[in-house]
Length: 377
Length: 104
Image (cartoon, rainbow over all chains, first blue to last red):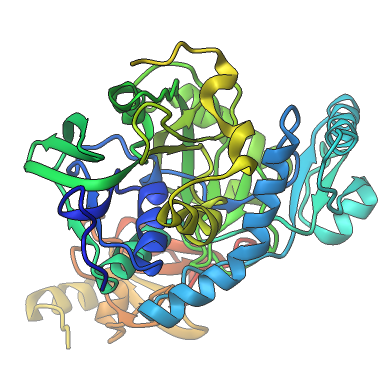
């Protein structure tokens, strides 16, 4: 174990204990840093407990090819990441990469999807990856249960999924084994940058660290200006329905429907701009259920056991923000809406860079300066 | 393990209100009005399923629709709550091994 740096009690304090914070804390501790992870309590707005668990590549990055490359890298590293977690904790996060489908219900939608994929891959500096646009008959060979309304879809062999609740639990177990000081009920009220370090006033007392990483999801919008950063994120609600556990029949994840490792079928992919409201709207639940049954009519026989809504952490362009403060060096922000997909990157690539002291030029495109938000002092 | 109260057994036999059904294909009988779960217990079937993840045996617990431990396959449909369905003549009740199948 290394000694805490001169700035305070810890080399680094990670603010936020969801998937982004946990993956970073895990990677930082693995890189030899002394780490505190400051978290809120059980009532935190925590998308890590409500997400859809895809490790998804296809279609991401139109408008920012660097994001497509970053996503593909995480997907490529995910299997090794899952192995490391299993060796360390004995827990299996059930990562599978059978390739994923985006089925379509009209020729118009299928054509639009094919155009999007083409435009994505025609971007300069785009990292190319294999994908296919499939007609109904080709799709049916892979997904025999599709309903009569499905006209085709896109497929990408890089897409996969995992058990994301178990991922959160596994990361928390892992950081415990690595000696990270996990501090729940430590909502950060104030951050002061002084003497080359950071002092946090929290609900659980004062914490000091040489570096800090803001990984607080929605709360990063409030925290970032305290250290000269900006994280203009907004909540976007999504509904999820899960059915009773069923013998495995759906062997590939899709954007809308996937079968979990334990057998439940998850149905999702709704988008609502309603602020911090996680109330379920029955109209939305029934709309996504109806759409899922059009894709796979046999789902109509299954009983629903739970449904919920969670709040995506979205930047104005939907791409992540990774940045170090210019005015308070040593303060970093990391925010994205794909905490599952990008977990491997956060743990294995981003955390070691932060441990070593800086992000480097590769991360310039992910700076929040792209939103032209005036930097706070 | 479970036995009907003697006076009910006597009344049942006198009135002849019995229902014939099957448990895993074996002929069985119950009292008209029994829930499927009560009928299973009266026939000595105390473990009606195994769990979907660990495969542990489970039997009826609450008998009132809350615990979901009495799940069985009834006439080909899996994960039915046996305590919420009345046994009917000719009904095919099957104990359930792990997860239900999506197509039944």
